[in-house]
Each structure stands twice: as structure tokens, then as C-alpha cells.
Image (cartoon, one colour):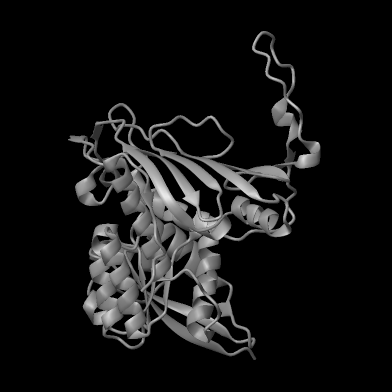
Length: 384
């Protein structure tokens, strides 16, 4: 008979969209339905969540909906409970640092959404506190687990690209202003005073995508702008948009490659997916999105000739080849939860810690400084 060990998990902010859909339903509850996380010795770990938040009614409804027994509005009480050694944070960024500091002080292992803080100083402080307290930490790096980026990882590892020269990425979509069409993102995203802004949101993602796929970032040049200066909130009230809704950036890597990434909530989609990356190397190129991946090797590259006087009859998109679906990719949030639980339970390798999260916050901060000062900002390695 398989031995199963209980792991108490404090899930703070689980009534929010990401905390509920991705972390509770698609990760923790899905893991429970499968009988827990399988360890290397054949035993299993069963996560046992306690739902934490400010709204008692919401927590009760969620618990009843999913047959969960434990929920509370008293974070300090559950932090003091040794039955729950793991703290998971899905709060808004403005509330995150204080809660994680309290969890570290209580000796809890930490698993958190990103960005881990509003400032690099606070993010680095969290990493130092976790190191000094001897607790394990993990920061969500969900984009790396997307099927498209896993296919890209396989191409890189196989040597398909040769030497990677450049990466161009486009992310975003039109977020309605909220007047004649309701906005599909919460209004706080567009208020700097509430922690909003696409730079602080997306550069934390771009940092780990770039450093884990292409190499460490040595400099950033960015331009953050607010294209839509006025929006309408969830209550029909017009408010000034004080946060940036688009960011255009160039990242130079230590290995010489150049990465250009555009992020915008004020762009209409003219691509196959909401995010696409084109990677060009000496031996081949690829275009990948959330799910799809197309390649063009060196020996199958066409030879265009520029002639503006006549239409070009060539179908350049037809020269690309779709990668086959050779693998079944699980939900990335669930996969990363499983990896972190193994890290906690049997010290399995895990690299996406609070220091990695601090590097993401640093990139956001320096990107905004680059925009404000109109110059390239060099980035030194981040250490404790």
C-alpha cells in the first residue's frame, strides 16, 4: 500500500482570479484528485489547503463548492499553526511583502506569485530573510511551462538554432476602456498608486523567460507609456489611468544576443496567438506562441530579393513548418506546484526561488528607470 503524507498549505488570496482558477482548482484540487504528488521513493504527498482571505462569505462559498473543510480570515492564527508548514501567496502585489515576511518569521516555506514585491529592495529583502530563516521558497514561473515555450526549449537543447542572434516578441491585446464595452482586466491594473502598470506586471515574466531560455540580461532600454489616459472602472466611474499600459524594450544579453519585446494593452491582435516570439539563429529560426511552434531551418530558408516595383508572389508563411505534437503538456501551474512540493518534501532540485523573483522585480524597476531617464541601463548580477 502506498504511503501518503499530508502537507498543510496556507492559500492566501485564493478568492482572486489567479489564486482560485490556476492555483486552487487547476493545481491543488487537481493534484488531490490524482492522489497527491508522487515522490522518488514511491510515496505520495497530499496537499491539504486552508483557504485564507478577508471576505468570510466568499471563503465559505469556495470551501463548500469544493468540499474543503478549512478556511479562515485570521492569517496570524494559521501562520502559528504547525499543521500548515507551507504558505502560498496570491494577493495583490501591494499586500504581498508584509504577508510573506510574516510567513517567513513563522518559519513557513514560501510559494508565491510574482512580482514578489513593488520594489527591488523589498524583493531582495524577502530573499535574504528566507535564506537566513532556512526556509524553502518558490516563485511562479508559469510561462516556461507553456506548450509553445517547452517546444522552444527542446529546439534550443537540440542545437537547432546554432548561435542565437536575436529574439523578437509581441505580447498583448486591446483592453476596452470600460465605457461602451466593459474592460476585461481589473481597473487597478491602470492605477500606479494601486500597483498597476504593464512594465511591473510583464517584465517579471520576461526576466525569467529570457534568462532561462536565452541567457542572462546585461542591459535594458525601455519606453513605458500610457496610451489610454482615461478609463472607466467596474462601477462605471471614470478615472485617470496613471500607470503605463504599454512598454517597448530592448534587452541585451551577456552572450551577445539581442531581445526586443513589445507589451501592450492597447494593441489589436494580428498574430496567431496573444504572445509570439521569433527566435533567429545561425542554423534556423522559430516562431512560437502559447501553444504552437513553427520552424525554418537554414537549409530550407528562401532567398528573397527586394524589388518594390512589382508584387512579390512568394507565400513566405508557407515556408515554415509546424512542429508536431509529440508530447502531452499538463497545466503549467500544476506542474510547477508538483515540482515545488517535491522540493519541500524530499529536497528535489528547484531553482525558481525568491532571489529569482527579485531579479524579475529589478528588471521592472530598471526598465521604468530607463524609460524615465531615456537611456540604456546596465544590469549587474543579483546576489545576496
